[in-house]
Length: 466
Image 1 (cartoon, one colour):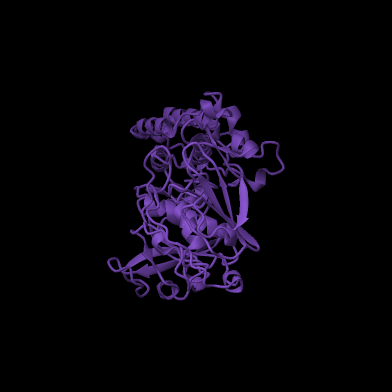
Image 2 (cartoon, rainbow, N blue to C red; image 1 turned 90 degrees about the horizontal axis):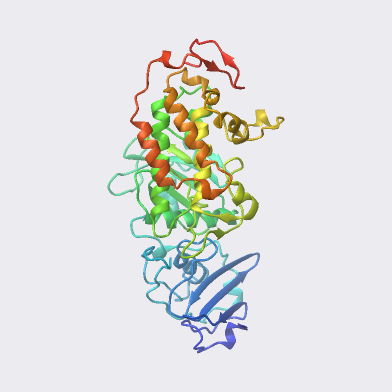
């Protein structure tokens, strides 16, 4: 294994790229049974970035980057060294076909060595564009276009705020996607990333890669993006009913019916089954009520793919990654070891299913002083006893649910929440079980005469929370 400055590697035959550039960049190579692996390590203080190639022009998918071509273009393309005609991935298509999980880079040109070290290092790594490295079906918006669409990001158009930044309501033309006046055209949601967020940039890039490639009725539609200067924005279809979190846990919101809850569970299961069934075996990794968005008819779609990554391939049983996600939803083996599999999503789905049944949060501040810190801890004793399982049901349902249906859904949740991931069913089986459950009719109120309060204590048979 050799580590050499690039300025010593001009005309090197050990890589399909030839460099004559400053010594801040290093090349690492080692033999492989089928090809020579070349690693380009770009270290621009204070943010290091890594990308890996092989001499056969096949990028290796490492560090959870689904489209390594996008990362390569980020580091080497017209972003950090914009005035220079440098390495450029000519193909904008990502191929997830085949078991080797690689994207094909059709052509890479040579770096130019015309810029000085000072010029290179003066360009921040985060201020890159993604131009040809994103799928063709996404629109590239300018900052001014999105300012016009959102009334200059006024507070009155803000839909929400999180650690990544803010989400604003905007309006664009349905056909041209150009910004329009408020109240005309179609409504969109514009997510604006905080400029100082390096982790947020990685998640932004993952979101563009995944939602730019895949289309499914239960994945939120990504319309376009903005990568102008240091600005990072995403433009989505607008989901008028907001998040599942709001409908389950806000007391001021009309409670959703049993049939709607099962329909939402089916939609979420379909979305996850689609991801797990792809050649890339995509793991969503951040399933939670706030990431499930509802359309006008309460159809559910998965949103926020910033933490998604490709799953294990070949003989690998898992992928190892830094533990990141939301407490209360993450699978125990993932939290303990960083080992990620599609069954990690199944566990998270079990938690969401419990939330749909109980109307309780996965983590609740009101229970912080109790031994049962999580919803799973609280619910499991009831889930294992069919005679007590109805005690977890949301009192806001007012008894408007099938007793057998509730027991079946609770039993399915328990399967998903098994400690050993091998004992959890795959999402395709979970979906099949829910679809059978969804065909059952909701009986009259008298079918469930006993109600229980938030602590599982039996109450009178009068309607509650209606």
